[in-house]
Length: 544
Ligand code: ADP
Image (tube, rainbow, N blue to C red; front, side):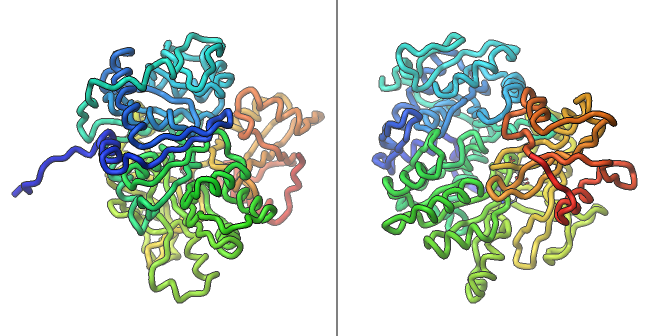
């Protein structure tokens, strides 16, 4: 027998409808790239987004399913696009501004974005992308002065007349329609598109709001440090509207001093960010202790493993709790979160931090399992290691436009994460290794395979193997181990210059080791485990 309940579609515009009905005067504050502060209320965000959604349809003839990209910081106009695009039935596609020019172009060509909204401060990067595009999108520039010049034709965002009242309603979407898309990068050059649905976005937002997760309410003011182009800012643009939490948008001001100032000035209570950001903020606070206790109650940290020392520093020096979470672009992103359970509270602070620095327990509507090398399911005993597989209400089921990658990653209704570790009897995930050959530096991916391929193209290099080495600031950095042709020499500077053309600057290794030979496995593959061990034992002496 079917239930007899109403069918209420869980759509992105209905999130903003709710925010406008219930929390119209809650605030969105943006520190714009030019340093000026912009403030308005949820009611303004609603009004302008609805109008923008109409403008998209009237001006560009946007049809359901069309992709519209953004190339922007965390700023109020970007929030307007987050709602207006799905509200026009289209797919909001934030582009990662930190990727290399060729990766960005590849992604735009794959997504076939019809219109691209670019912040004026990012136009110099974007100009290099344009010659590589295989189609001609329309461009709109945000925050451009009247006499702003770019090397391509564009419209001013401010000329879209968003303060004119909208006459049309949102496009009525099916809750399973696509509303947003992010590409995961870092593998062998081919990023993979993840297409979120209205329903998955709504359910993820509701779930991360709950007390066992981010515990966000109308009493909060949230600082959105995670970029809107990183898995939709971890769902914050949606959850803050549902929770009635004020939103503070730092745009390009991501230096510790600016972050701390925003926390103080806007009385921020929660914030999100990768460990590299929080390590820098901790360091800044140690050097510049605030006169008054910060209003920041908790910060959410993930994207890379969180060092216990980071949690300890904030706990002991500033009474601020770091809450560790794990997820992926494919998981919207929140898969697990590491809050303590009541029976942990009798443990010592150090023992508690051991648990808090694990990746945590599954969110409701998400299931994890561990698969051993022999293909069987590992026990949740905290000892048996395996690869994590995940399924759930906001986990991708396929990649966009990529059958081969999809067939590899999604098997029997589960997604293979490529992360390796254990689950303890209390259900806490601990990541100990990564199957995918990637390095994560400051929250951004670096493909070791892509670097190795590029390095061996250098005339003096016979063999190259790139491994991740721990880094206090960036979590991980690439170390390039190379074997050079007899009678040749090569300097780190030569190699950096050589790689700069094909990689974003943060992806270029700053450390190199010249070796007689690179250790190999029994089947002749580069033995990265052995190299990592040599590095840990101090046997490799990198030069910069
Ligand atoms: P994001 O943009 O959130 O970093 P990605 O899809 O780019 O998402 O990266 C996901 C991967 O990042 C995971 O598979 C894992 O390897 C790593 N990761 C994410 N969060 C954590 C964490 N808390 N601890 C360790 N690794 C993490």
